[in-house]
Length: 271
Ligand SMILES: [Zn+2]
Image 1 (cartoon, helix red, strand yellow):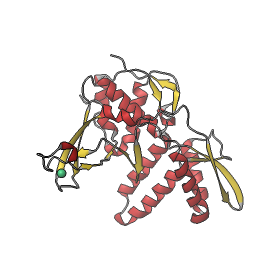
Image 2 (tube, helix red, strand yellow; image 1 turned 90 degrees about the vertical axis):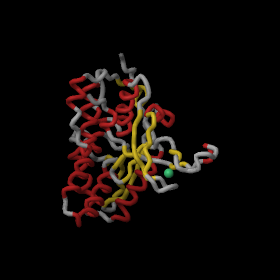
Image 3 (cartoon, helix red, strand yellow; image 1 turned 90 degrees about the horizontal axis):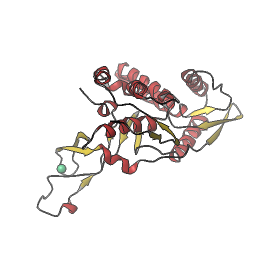
Image 4 (cartoon, helix red, strand yellow; image 1 turned 135 degrees about the vertical axis):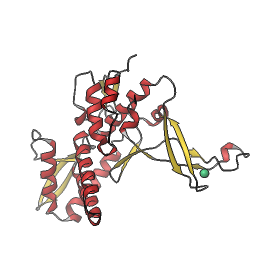
């Protein structure tokens, strides 16, 4: 059994090769903690990657998630079901919902390369340029640590931590033109956050955030997903309510558009 080479969704000219996970790999990764999904993703992809090239920490989040999915669908010779429960907006009951993860390829987007998008903002009266990129593995692991810190903080500090996370999310997508790219990612990110903390929200952070959102809209790639309040969601095919007039025409049954969190461990085979 061989997993075909995966063209990176952010850069389809580059292909990555993975080997099949062994029993020992699955034992190694079975006791995962959902709260460290990004760390798990990095370790799992590093373990299975057999081709040369950039470390999965340098990949975009979309590339990382697509890789987990790619390995999983090529390991399953039959259906590869993901099962969830959801509250039905039509009858109010909870329904089981399973879908074949192979169906997610219908919305898979591959780019020849990420577009180069620059932005600019005035800081201390000086036009300051930056370029914009989707969140990469370093950024996602950093944000995961902030989410961890939020769960351990006192309850009344929750909103404060959420605001910190939102700020970090935006700042992790840009690189100021005057940064030293050889400095470690986290050091640069923290320096960048420090730099804007003492700046006005409306004339610095908000314009940066707006430019980042608009640029990311032009950079969609990988599986259809969305980053909502620090969690990645995927969009399975809509679910039909099984309680709604089952005698009627199936086409007329009401459907619910669903989104489920993308959880790395659901894509790692269990022993
Ligand atoms: Zn229902």
